[in-house]
Image (cartoon, rainbow, N blue to C red; front, side):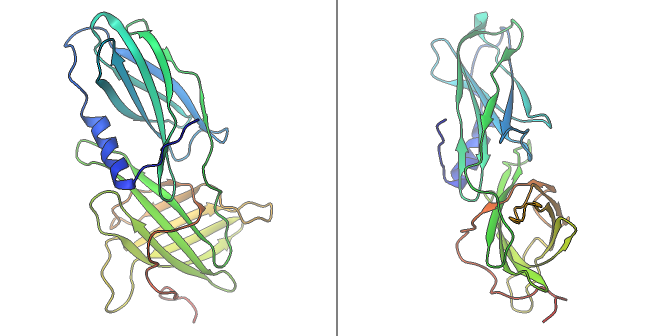
Length: 275
């Protein structure tokens, strides 16, 4: 399936335009209902995926479009229109995936459909991850995306969270940074962690000490299962955000690699960690 990388800020702006600025169309006529399912690596997406559904009337160069999220079963539904006479030239389904640096999309089309005759069923869309899942060891880095969908009050945010692990023996510590697509200042700081059974617990602190640039996000907690196969692979993590953070608590999938410009701050231990 074709995939289309895009710059992060441009991708966020495009999403807002698609979700909020439908083209002009007829004032009456039947509505088009579209339903379908998306899986990633054979399972329902966790966290949910954004799906942009767009439809073109016959003879029109502009589309009516809406962005929806997959539910816990990976299903989505959308309503577009109205369409004069019920005739629709084409429908495009575009699930969006995000990883460390890019947005990428997969397009599925349906041609010559009719609005008003019940939901249009789209065949299941099976996706894979572009990057390898993150692994835990000293010197590794990994990254994920915290998605805040657009709403009536915000353009939304696709915040890239990068984590660098500096030490895993005795005490686990490292560094982190968040880069926002929304007009927000970067957040960064130190982290400490521990293993509890087969789960990795990380505490990300935004307190950098005297003379450091103040950050908005004071604390983030991350809990992630670790594979018992001996590879140290991280499963889907749960991020719990302090109210000071401009991101929401959500599931996050981490991938290998973190290339968010310079690493800030310098290596060190968070407050309270052994020296």
